[in-house]
View 1 (spheres, one colour):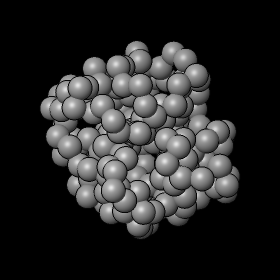
View 2 (cartoon, rainbow, N blue to C red):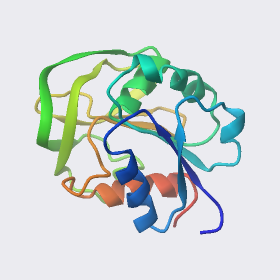
View 3 (cartoon, one colour):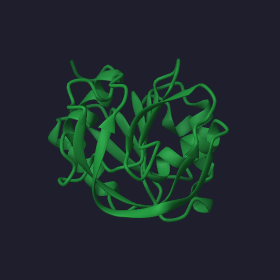
View 4 (tube, rainbow, N blue to C red):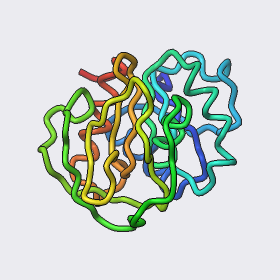
Length: 188
């Protein structure tokens, strides 16, 4: 692991270090960076993960990064919501806040759900969610209380998941992160 391959943008979420450790368990070198970073400072990374966080206003710098990066992107929780905002989707208060295990139903396995069962349990911790899918995105997964648990841009390697694949409670979370690393051409 001589080269840092994945940039993890820290939006102040409680699980940002879990993302880092989960990637290290996969033998993928990563670095946690502040969400005030510039696009120039992200040159050379093979992929970028936008973490969750408590305050969308403090993470708005990420929208410019999301729109202008030319590498695969994965947004987790707030990162998922930022991707939606960047591309014209809408976020809002969830009808029912999730702070527990929830059943995820995979609608379209695409790249990040390859080899993952059509139903699995995942840890969710959020009070806001994507309410309206951005143009040029497809839904990859839903739950009983969130219709857009995961999404992907139709032509770009940009993914968002509302749940937390980096925590131990999420079944197949390592496989989801590994699949993202494959999209980044880091793993086979």
